[in-house]
Length: 250
Ligand code: XBP
Ligand code: MG
Image (tube, rainbow, N blue to C red; front, top):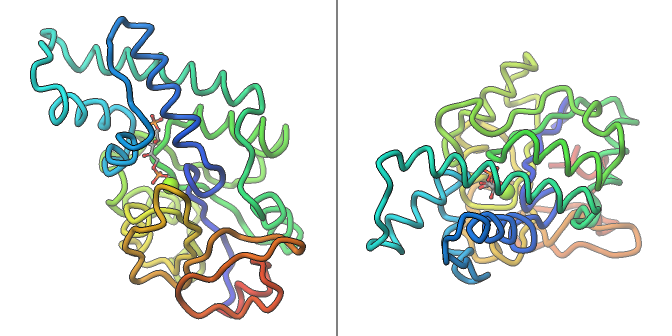
């Protein structure tokens, strides 16, 4: 295929943000509001089945805190908690605390040089995307992306395809014109639901997910001096890393 645009998920794909970023920020917000909730790394792995931070908090209360006495306006509490979480998370990113995954900055630069259009399709809050791009990629990196589709902009989050359909519509492109990059089963369900050929790079939380339907499953995007491992699918990246040239062969 000859893609005109690359569509990227953020959390887990551009950077390993979940365990040492989002999780830490959720716990800081709980402490700030005097809640003795502690999301350990294994528990957080289970909670990741639900996308979206507000949705995840509600799921946690339903499933793991049946005795919690919800205030009359529980939704307002969740919104307040999530606002605090976003503040903690973006502050963490501002310290440059979370680096991009191998090959991400290189591939984005190559894509720009080749004239490919770039977009983001994520369930995370828009402020989180901006902070990651600015502090971990480049000061002007937000402007590299024609569309940043994020958070509550669509009512149904991944695994629903809505966020990808929104990005495609905003760019005036069909799925056949694009490639998606994801790290999780929920993300893959969303991209496949939108009809997109999808490249998966796994991480610690998603390695065992069901990636059937993906064009290729890789350990990461790789670098010229640090080859990526191919875990499934046809991969002709002879040089061991994902380049624009290797994507054309998908
Ligand atoms: C990412 C998420 C997000 C983040 C938290 O999923 O599920 O919920 O964990 O973000 P994906 P917010 O990578 O599939 O888009 O707290 O800002 O919602
Ligand atoms: Mg993801």
